[in-house]
Image 1 (tube, rainbow, N blue to C red):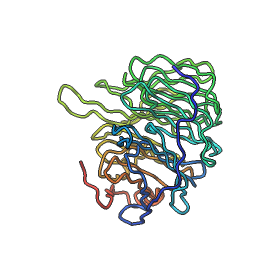
Image 2: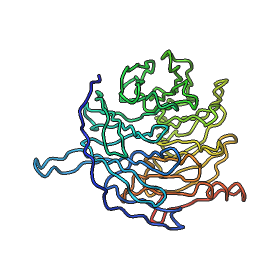
Image 3: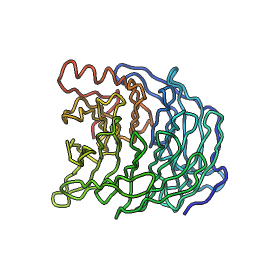
Image 4: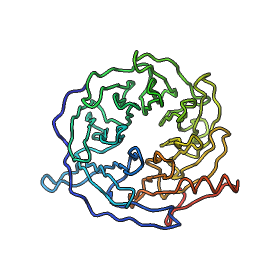
Length: 366
């Protein structure tokens, strides 16, 4: 299933980029990607943002369409691109090590038996190691101590690896349908996986045993994204499917209390939930979906605080570790990353109470 792989990414020179600041568009827009953005991650400290994308391009030599991936690193102090990595495969997932020195990416060629996990010394633009997978790597997470990596590809398994060498793989097996998402608990003792079988499973990292299974209620749904609250007391799962009885979307974010396994709230969405993250200050849960809307929630009460509208489906969201900056990427024509002052977004609502809608300058609800 896996084997060591030589360098398969090419480090590119810094590309031309544009930063636009506008009150209508939050606190700025990062432009530079030429294709759809699938993943975002802030480095610890919030000074660097990584973004991954991919699409097809015409090979000038063979005249055939080939997949193409871009991984960009942005300086958040000056809002400029610091470095870019090009690959023959799309970048579907990215995460930073706790010290911010390493970036780990997952991706592959969509529709083919070709996936890859890569570890980068991104500041020196060097790939340290990589392993191939039978299928596209669509989600990954790094443990809080930086020693373990969890990944999922198409299939019913998740895999734990030792970092930075991607050694000693341990398989987590128990789902009955494709696993879509993975996350580490804040203390690093547990891993959560979400699957199309409608369950979230919790695993003991040391024993690789499943310790708990959380089942979604009602119509069978597929879990697309999971996240732990910073205090480790709550886990949230984003899901979505079509109810075959009435052809309606059954999409929501479900939260459970981990100590008891009790469902606490269900937060409704109008379409498939694609992204989910808790704010580091424990106050807010943020979710994005295919309807182009990012929703901010008080997850303890189930109250929707605010919404942000994009021109296309939400591909990724990320929050800086100081809880000040929110980054969102919609699958829209201009392939832009939008930046928002999270303190202002949430603070205004908590102070004035009513729910409001924010729209980007050229956004249209779909």
